[in-house]
Image (cartoon, rainbow, N blue to C red):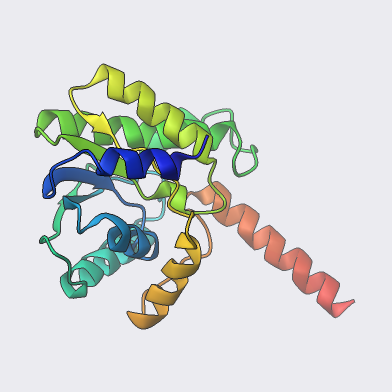
Length: 211
């Protein structure tokens, strides 16, 4: 399914300035997503990422996203809301899945954890729409993200904005905006398992280069 086309159809039928709660994982991913939707919606960034299991990394990313939205000019002012940060929530849903590869079952549960909380808060605070920046990454399963969002749409009094933000060169644009705004770009998703796998990949590449 072309989720980008579905998003365009949704946006063509809303009143401009409608409020949207945008789950955001980091400043680089937020950059291209905000550029795409912030002239249609009055966006509140929802930073809910208990998967970022190192507190130093968590704080680095949250400060970077705040810095970015303070400088990024849009039609409607961008607000910011921090969710509850407790890595134990992530470890609970990933138990037994520690050795799953990226895009595997652990990631599915992580998408669900973060999107479910986003939908809950959107419902509680009366946001008509919610969505996530996660689909910008080529490393994320866009079908899972949208299937989870659609399911939550049925359970809460808020609407999921379908998305595939890597369409229309979204990921490439995020790299360009990161350079323009001098944004910190992490090289792993956030959890200790993705960090472990990334470091293993780097070590293997270094061994091959040295051989």
